[in-house]
Amino acid sequence: MPHVVVIGGGIGGLSAAHELVDRGFTVDVYEARPDFGGKARSQAHGAAPPGKKPLPGEHGFRFYPRFYKHIIDTMAKIPDGAGFVVDHLQPTSEAALALIDNFTWYKFNRKQVGTPYSLIETLELFFQELDFDAEDISVYVAKLLEYATSCDERREGEYEHMSWWEYLDATSYSEGFAKSQRGIPRMMVAMDPVVGSARTIGTISMQLFADFGATGGHTDRTMGGPTTQMWIDPWIAHLTAKGVGLHLGERCTGLDVAGGKISQVTFSGAGTVTADYYVLAVPLEVAMELITPAMGALDPALERLRLEDVDKLASWMVGIQYFLYEDVPMVRGHLFFPDSPWALTAISQPQFWRKLGLFRKTYGDGSVGGCISVDISEWNTPGKLIPKTAKMCTPDEIAEEVWYQIKSAVNGAGEGGTVLTDDLRHSYHLDTDLDYSGGLPPINTSRLLVHPPGSWQVRPEAGTAIPNLVLASDYVKTHTNLATMEGANEAARRAVNAILERSGSTAGRSEIWPLVENGRIFIAMKALDRLLYKAGRKHLFQIAGIKQGARAAWWIRKISKYSGLDLIDDKIDKTFRPTKIIKAILGRFGITLP
Image 1 (spheres, rainbow, N blue to C red):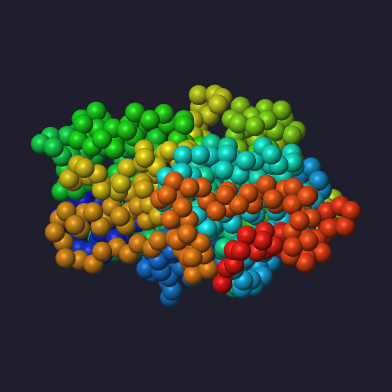
Image 2 (image 1 turned 45 degrees about the horizontal axis):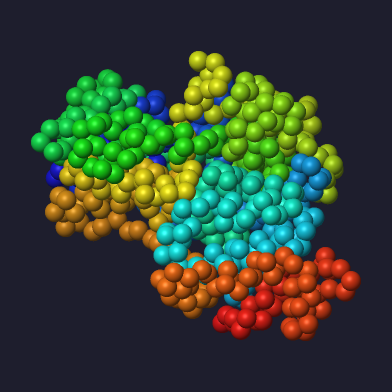
């Protein structure tokens, strides 16, 4: 069978190796770091006495929403003990919102919604305790419903070329609501809606809100222990048993071209390596450095990527863990901070790791009983305590600022008074992918694609025009269309399928799943929008003026008159739900959904 060299041992590279070796290929994986797993790997914090493990640092906490399919399928194929890695995923039964400025903190559970307006009802659940203007919420859900009923052609041809901020017309909202809308996408997908494409953020928002509103016992999933221990180590053991060659500390220094294809690859330690096929599975900025003019001459898509400004395409999402003397669960799930300057999201991890034993008996020197893992998604905004951007802060300053923001949100709020105190803190761990050796700002070696408007055209397909080179990383064009482990795994499957096709292999293809958006509910309206788009017309909601109608008080009075809904008296009733508004608006224009 053909020999394949995989350059990069993160999720994309390991996924490609897994799929290839299962189909009989000879595979070697070369990873520059001293550990496999890329951004998903665990990072040891401090030493540990005999019989215990070091405190578990991470690039960030693990988040597995329900719409993930590809990476979950791979986990189900990795044996670990009597079961499989997928068995280590733990459901979260709650989620929570905490505001820094308004002293609001509340938990919410999944609820069953079974109407065509489930998206709206889910948003009511999400915003029900926040003191936002009801008209802002109505406009926002109208815009989301507009996106949900838009056809794929409009999304790619129109929404791909505008930002989510522009699509929402977010500058017309009240200051507090606009602030929250800038924070939520950054927390969930590390994308600034001001610069992220409406198509990407809109599509993933549909998936995430559907996850929160779908039936079932959990809002999402997290890993039931440190990622390397629970996933990467069993994966490496499985690949080793399958015969995959695994090489650590091998940085790729160049790809050579001869005869219209890749002729050889050079590594820092192994030197020159040749193979029948090559899988480039490195982070975006590394790929852009490795693509040469000779490669770009063979593939215009690679040339476009090579010449692109990496700072325009890539952003930061970096994790910090606070190790505590005592466990502070807070909420059984993820905690979101919509108005935090640094777009924070957090989770208290030991409550999900009970199968491994008590945290203090398993990790560190026995004095640590808790761990709060935080993702920092905004690095260019000044902090609240320290008036500097995160990029210009030292690690200690980052730790103090993030701790201050979290305390400001959860202490003294409605879910239990003072939750976090300074005397709880043992130590912190900041992602080691931040390199401070050259001073400030640090170098981030694990940046994420942020999908600015028009970036879909810059991103290459998994199968390049170079016949023996494929790409397996989260910047590749995928259904997932997001820089996540799910996107990297899907890209790897597409890369493997390209190799199977080019090699003439008869092995079964790697399965790929499209995103699903309640198609049965909105199929008729999407079909109508397709006709409107092809005719050069705006979306029906734009034609009908629903956005303006949802905002204007006189329009609400008009709806009240025609629909028979008692929505107002002398002023807007703050208890009304956006569902009533949207239903009434749709009904006024003769729009009904099944």
